[in-house]
Amino acid sequence: MPTTTHDVIIIGSGAAGLTAAINLAQDRKVLVLAKGALDGGSTNWAQGGIAAVLDAGDSFEAHVEDTMVAGAGLNDRATVEFVVSEAPAAIERLAKLGVPFNAGEDFGDRWHLTREGGHSHRRIVHVDDATGHAVQVALLKAARANPNITLIDDLIAIDLITSRHGERYSGDGHVWGVYAFNKKTKHVDALLGKATILCTGGAGRTYLFSTAPRGATGDGIAMAWRAGCRVSNMEMNQFHPTCLYNLEVKNFLITEAVRGEGGHLKLPPGVPGGGERFMPRFDPREELAPRDVVARAIDHEIKRLGLDYVHLDISHKPPEFVRQHFPTIYARLLDLDIDITKEPIPVVPAQHYTCGGVVIDLDGRTDLPGLYAAGEVTESGLHGANRLASNSLLECFVFGEAAAKHIRRHWDELPAPPPIRPWDESRVTNSDEEVIVQHNWKEIRRFMWDYVGIVRTTKRLERAQHRVALLAQEVDDYYGNFRVTPDLIELRNLLEVARLVVRSALHRKESRGLHYTLDYPDMLEKAVDTVLTP
Ligand code: FAD
Ligand code: SIN
Image (cartoon, rainbow, N blue to C red):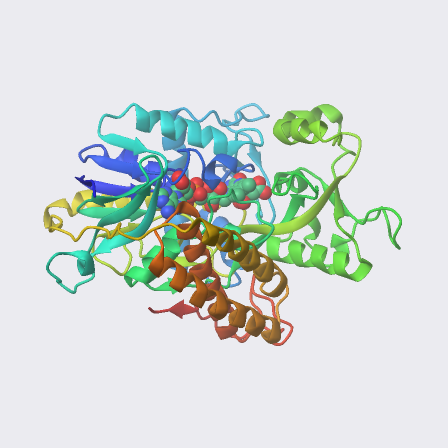
């Protein structure tokens, strides 16, 4: 088994991982790994932008308040204040790295600030409607140019190396790196470091319909849980209201900024009220209510009228305005024969963001010594019961930086990794059984969509719990007997995450933010995190 030792191991090359790497590389040697392509995470797909207080009429207090209101009070105020106050500096760092944020449209405005649901001010900096791609490109360019950073793609982390894997058991749970399956050599490598940062993104692919890319299988959450970390608020899965409805293109997001710039949600023609806006019936903030409210309203209308989708219409705005603000969406939809300057877009809600995750503190520290985490894999206290639009990339930049700074400050106190036991590669692959992996993968995503979606009931959650238990038995047997493959690694993690989501959802006896259950429709007075301990 190839074993390599580095100063710090970062699992994930999205916004969180690369931010941490660039800071650490000032005086440490860093290995960054990605399970597929280096730009294969959600970061590359982010559209709307990054929230920060950058306008004289805006205030930190207002951004904090908007975040707390969207999060239905489940947020940790100290975390929210920390992230909001760090936001302008994070944007400056990105601008310095060359992210070409759109310039202001009025004289004297440095950047154009767009608006999204739940924000009381315009405060979203963006690069057209493809902000994430611009950020990913700039961060990768800076990382590639830095001799202290080694970037490796196609290396899929399987499990964290803890003191349990040491040749001598120390029992303190210290994390020394990770075992990772090398897709090129088909062997398992041991990657050792004094510190490890989990930046593996979310778990959107636990659901049948998700805007997240193929690799969002919750690997980091599952690995941290198996190693002994607490996870929190796993029931809080965000459904974005407006994913394109198309039978072939299943996960194309239509950014919230379309509503922010005046887009309307309407019922399609041919039903009572066809062609009319429906959001005014649901919330005084109309199309700009927080995502949970808008997604539930769409779900309600779709079920009430037996629709496949609703319409998102921005065709009342001048064509040049639409093309200029949303060039990526305009071009992509024109390819699908939809001209958004002339006609509405068919949309449905889809899973979009994992609000829960690995519990961290303000320095990005997890429960285990040597293990840090940043970005969508975490539950930092920022999002509470529902993430405010464009606060996610921001969280990656702030916590990627915070974790790196903490490691650098405490470098001399971190012990070096001990000798560790090799990975057992004696198991064989049975190709007949690999079909089962595919079937189980589909089954999990289907029942999570059907039973643990936008509107829940205890009965449906219990049904999902039963399915998870059956599949877990099957996958554990399979995992114990056969050589690991990327699909099997992901299936095991998807199932672990599904189990945590269902368990947390059953635990919460109220409706709050993204967790809405017909059996407990009211919100309890006191907001309490759902914290699970291994
Ligand atoms: P990611 O960018 O998802 O990166 C995860 C990394 O971990 C990848 O490199 C992946 O290869 C690696 N990885 C995962 N598992 C393993 C493993 N087992 N082994 C090795 N490597 C692994 N947020 C905003 O704030 N504004 C927006 O406008 C916005 N738009 C969005 C649009 C879309 C379509 C989507 C899906 C999300 C959007 N979000 C937005 C959310 C935001 O993009 C993500 O939350 C954020 O990019 C997550 O960054 P990250 O660094 O935590 O993880
Ligand atoms: C979007 O552009 O609508 C996504 C923004 C986000 O997820 O924060």
